[in-house]
Every structure is written in structure tokens, then in C-alpha cells.
Length: 160
Image 1: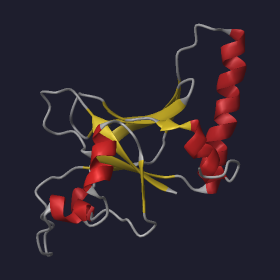
Image 2 (image 1 turned 120 degrees about the vertical axis):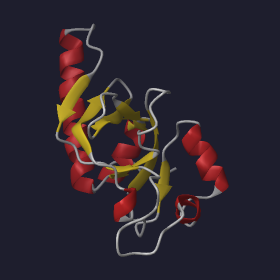
Image 3 (image 1 turned 180 degrees about the vertical axis):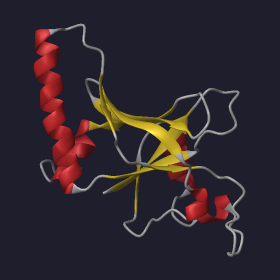
């Protein structure tokens, strides 16, 4: 399951990603659910636990950039994204809901944003991803993925 998520960053920073692509393979989803078990165990021991953070999580951060890649024809970001995501789904994204995209959805290299300090953040009912755009001191964060979707990706819950 491939999910497209909206990304937020400090409002006066122009260098944040527009979207993030998360590939929830069954193996990755099962690993997340095992970590959710850790979360639940820790939460029972200490109800003040707010979030649990895991390092080194790969997510494709998508930045509209200028659409140019040396040696290739320029690509218009809006035309490219419109080829995969409907106007209704773009509304969903801007409202904070994840959107499932086709398995064929791939990100052109020049729309990949280089980041550092990639993390997965777990809270009571969802996960989200954070990172810092390379050479920028502002953290960016995705909207959340409810655990119900993670369970679907792991094959534990049927799609509604």
C-alpha cells in the first residue's frame, strides 16, 4: 500500500516538502504494529507517555522544486501530481487525510527532497513521520496514518 501524506513545516520556511510518500509493505506494517505493542506496554507503565520516536525511517519527501533535472525535460509538478491524484483526493490531503495512490506511483528524482534526521513518531492512534530538509533548521512533519490503515497493509484488517 502506497500512501501520500500532506506535509507541514514552519510557515515562513519555503523549503519544506509538499507531500511524503510512504510505502507500507506488509513487512513494514507488521514492524510498525510490533512497535505499537511496545507503545501500549510503556503507556500502561507510564500514562504520561506522549509519543515514541524511532530513527532511520525512509520516506520519500516530495518537494515541487523547479521541475528540472539536468539532462531531462522539465516536468510541471502540478501536471505530474494531477496524473495520479484527483482534485477530491488533493482536498483530502490538505485536510490531513492520507490518500492511497496506485502501486505505479513513483517520484521523479528532481522532486525528491534530501532530508536528514528521519523519524517515525507514534502516538495513541496513529503514526507520522518527521525530518529536516537538508541544511534547514526547521522540522517538517507529515499528517498521520491511522493504525487501521497500518493493519490493512499488514493484512490484519480488511479494507472498508
